[in-house]
Length: 506
Image 1 (cartoon, rainbow, N blue to C red):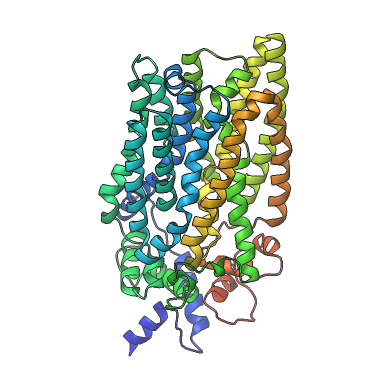
Image 2: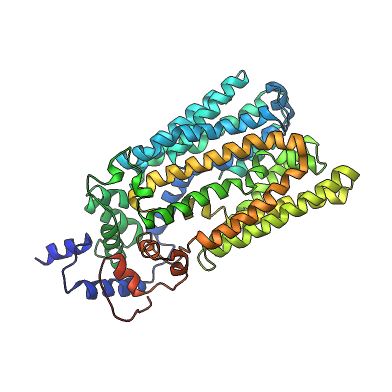
């Protein structure tokens, strides 16, 4: 009888009269746990996360490798391209068109077969696309390969920018066509590792719960979040919260490949969607794409045109960004998501304003100091964006989606990001060719708009589990609610327990 009661509790079906005491005890037990981040089980979790993160490396790799190739003479001559122009924009944008084409498949594959199969299928397509592009004998074949690459990235649900930039720089000293083919071939390394390792990784415990596989979910949580026992307080609380929030009903929308209604059919869902789509679009339209795909064109507006110098600067930029992103990831909890996003985007707007003025001086008067200032603020923009945005671009949308809507919601986010990327990457080439440095003024005002929008609509998600965020979105003013301190009442609400007593902080 005791075992049956415990199983019911683990699955979120708590007995009337004991719910409050049990939930309060769970919350207290979890907060009293002192877990080291350097245990063997935690190190295994970090390895799993590192392999999973490889699914997203192609986004960073593609931006840097294509930005580097755009500054390589051999690549431009082979495909008869220029640093800026419509053909350059199309070459960059076809990757996003592939992302858009992958949208209908992303949610169904990840919901029906599991997250690991989505990673596997996407990685296979990335390898195929790489082979097509690396063996290209003309622009149509190269565009076809990049389309398949984009399709694979959409399904894999995706930072290899440092490796890409320096691979291009090293190969720039080669005189053959291999100077641009080798960096393209390197795109398949990360996906190859995912293909080999993905089925040695655990499936998502939330996916298990959504498919009535509670024992498997408990085992994953015990193995990677606790000490290996399913009776650990962390495992019990996480399972209870997940079970209370995740539907295993076969009629639920995540069991129907065509049903996206749960993304917008309630007040809570619509407020979540605003944050998800806003983050997806802003993360692409803030000017950061220029720093990767169009770095050579930006350096050209600053008066820097020598090939090896351009590629060296293109390689230095992501190395600094990595350090900045690590710092930003560390700051996202103590400072919070909202302050990082809003403050950093305001600084980015100021950087673009300064880059506009210094670029005008550098190109119109040949002032070398102005050119140096342009380069400095290009780097300051990238570092600032990396601190405030790079760690959150994947994390924040995921945090704002429920388990039932996560796969389809992330697919919709990638669709929004791909459409935004298609617009900015295709239009930037002709814009640079037509108006040069004045194009930066667009981002001065757009980034300020983003700051205002986020202030009024983006919630603060720190210090809460994914399931506990539902309390925020059920509120009349989710942003105001998100700025309140987490309490024991948060746990009670997540477990659907009614408690009118005074809130106790946990």
